[in-house]
Amino acid sequence: MPHRKNGTTRRAPMGTAANLEPRTVRGRTDSPRTPVAIRARGIEVDEALDRYIRERCGFKLGKFAKSIDRISVRLEDVGGPKGAPSMRCAVKVVLSRHESIVVEVVEGDHRSAFDHAIDAAERAVKRTRDRSREKARRI
Image 1 (cartoon, rainbow, N blue to C red):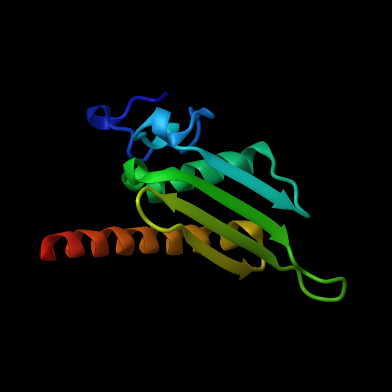
Image 2 (image 1 turned 60 degrees about the vertical axis):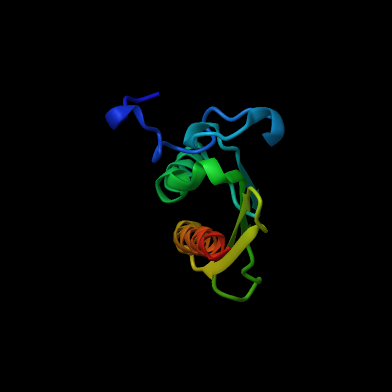
C-alpha cells in the first residue's frame, strides 16, 4: 500500500484489501478494507475501469469508511437497438445503523454515469450522517 500522509488511508482505493468476513467480525474498517462489489451487464469491466471505480470510491467515500458496511456498483448498457448508447450506473452504499443509500444515473458512457452517481452518493452519505448527528444533539 502506498505511503499516506500521517499514515491515514482515508482516500485510498476502496476494497483493495477487503475480505469476506461479516461486518460483525470485521468491525469498523478503513478505506482499503471496505468491500466494493462491481457488477456489469452488457459491458466489459477491464482492469483500468475496475481500478478507476475503486480509486474514485476511496476518494469520494473513504472519509466515511468507518460508517460504511459495503458498496455495490452496477453498470448496465440500457441503450436499445435503435437508440443512442445509454449506460446506467447504480451505486448502493450500505451504512451501519442507517438505511441503505441507492443512487441511479443514466448517461452516455459508463465513466460519466459512474462519476455522477458517486458524487450523488457522497452527498447522500454526508446528508444522512449530518441528520443523525443533529438528531443525537436534540435528544
